[in-house]
Length: 161
Image (tube, rainbow, N blue to C red; front, side, top):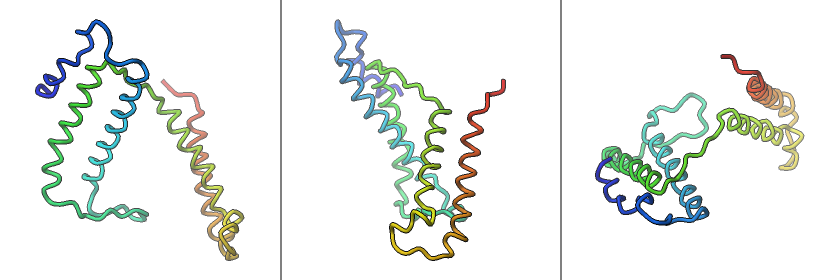
């Protein structure tokens, strides 16, 4: 990390009489840096996807990255992470604390609500609904909803030490 932090030495707010950024500016930059970290994570995840997708995957990523991209990307991604870390430290941007519990609850709640839109009664808004949808698809959607609710309910249980 050495070289990138050295470039930021003039930015260290500890050496300044007053902070360079006001609260709103710091928050604005923090949002960007968080999004950049997420994007870098996404890029790394895409690079490392196996060539053969999981059975039943709805999204099939082509293996179309140029051969040299992984080699070029690795040190650049490391450098991006180091620069973000250095900026976070130099600008004294505090980390956000997020609850895994509440984050997963939000995801599951969204999915429980979302699945409602795909039952046969709701599909009628998109055109006539084949009678077999209610018999064959609705029970599958009900199973999905039930599993999502099971996960959601299990988060309501007190944690064990």
